[in-house]
Amino acid sequence: MNKYRIPENLAISDSGFLFLASTGETFSVNEIGKEILKGIQLHKTDEEIINDLLNDYDIDKQSLQKDFDDFILQLQKNNLALL
Amino acid sequence: MNTKNKYERPVINKFYSGMMNKFGSQTIASPLKEIEGKRLNDLTDKFGSPLFVLSEKKIRQNQKSAIRIFKTRYPKVQFAWSYKTNYLNAVCKIFHQEGSWAEVVSEFEYEKAKLLGVRGENIIYNGPEKSRESLITAIKDRAKIHIDHFDELYDLIELTDELKLKARVAIRVNMDVGIFPKWDRFGFNFENGEAHQAIRRITAQKNLELIGLHTHIGTYITYAESYKVAASKLMNLANWIYDEYKITIDYIDMGGGFASLNTLKGQYLPAEQTVPSLDQYADAIANGLLEVRYKGEELPTLYLETGRALIDDAAYLISTVIANKRLSDGTRALIIDAGINFLFTSFWYKHKISQATEADAHTENTAIYGPLCMNIDCINEGMNFPAMKKGEKIVMEYVGAYNMTQWLQFIKMRPNIIMIMNDGSIELVRKAETLNYLLEQELLPLKLT
Ligand SMILES: Cc1ncc(COP(=O)(O)O)c(C=O)c1O
Image (tube, rainbow over all chains, first blue to last red; front, side, top):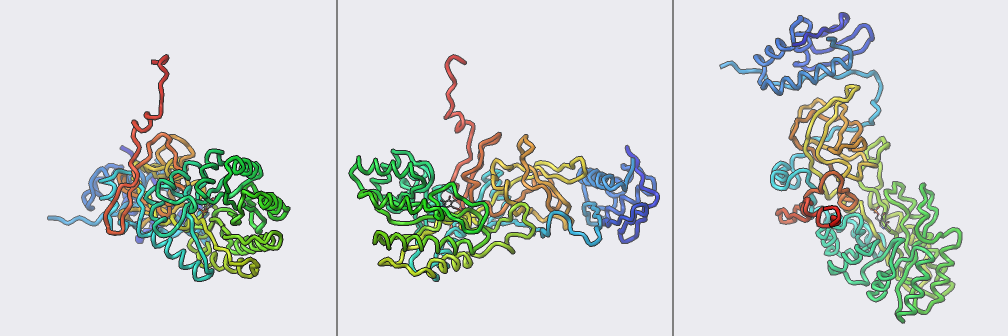
């Protein structure tokens, strides 16, 4: 069970636009990406986030777990998720 | 019943202001699910993965259209299929049926052409290594022997005297056509008089019949005008031969070298936008030949040994995704079951790679690696590519030239090759190699058992 956190100065818009004030970098995420980031923002654990998504979306747990892990790696690469 | 929302893989994209990424303006190819109406998954279910797929229709179309393009610009044209480009029997046979002769560069290619029914006089025997035995055969067969160096010329003089037979010969000529690298290792040089010297030698022999002039200025030549320079130099040499010896040659052989639609590594724009068309090459050659008025009795026939431009787009390599990875810097990597062992040309080409299944629209910079346990086994260092799941198929296009001859039996056995025939049927044209195939050639010394 992991709990990530996102940088304090990261702004997430409803349309999935991200702005990292500390560096001026901008990103875009799709809907599921946004859901994951919001889950992290709400201090949920990765399991909680995954279970929420399983309730809402038509996807099996194993595939979601893989995509989730891969997405977290991309967030970490961009310094957008910290453990 | 509660209906759930449609799922889409989570993705993140970084914005770069006003900056192109370093991988050039690659556009993402749309999925290629079928080849001539055959679903890729059905093909691999039946024949395994990886799998080379050839198209009979495409080969015939390519050869027919090349003949038309050249014949509308120059009256007498003869193609000879460059065996080393792809010497599968099925491929060679189609070219021969379309009227193309055989251009071979080794003894075994020569024998292969004969087994396919090509008559000796329709075989062009090129290359720097021709054994005495093979020269004897070629002399007896009345094949067209293209002399590469003086040692070969002396061999021929000796052999024809011994055999009391005439050999029909041409010389390969290398020359400066304004491109780099200069292919001056093959044949006799034009500018420094070596070619003239060789011709003097030949014409002094009663058993050597000088019937043509040959050049091959290089491969994947992207500057069509080079061919004009080469063609006019050979025509000038033909005129010199006529002036000096009153010999009318039968042909001028311009070799191969036309670029195919593959994009070279380090080339920014895709080949589709940069390489000359066959029409442009044909214009250059015909102009070069015709602008120098030939003085001999009859205009020489134009021979062409076009390789890659006639076969590259007639073949595909289907491969299966083995795994997804992330490299230490976060770059996505895809491992597939075909590597440089089967795709030799990925050393110099950025192959066109498409997914065979409809994937999501989001793409990410992705490195594509083969399955070999070797760091060099990289098919593409980074291209925009959609996410793929293990087991899904990807397709590499324009792989017909050199891969099915230069492939390596390294770590893995070479896979099946099939051909989609004109009538829609599918034929296995080369069986996948097996362990037995490998062991057949091996001998274990008794002492070691
Ligand atoms: C003598 C000769 N002819 C023809 C060819 C075919 O060349 P390409 O595939 O570039 O058309 C080659 C290949 O290098 C060659 O060496």
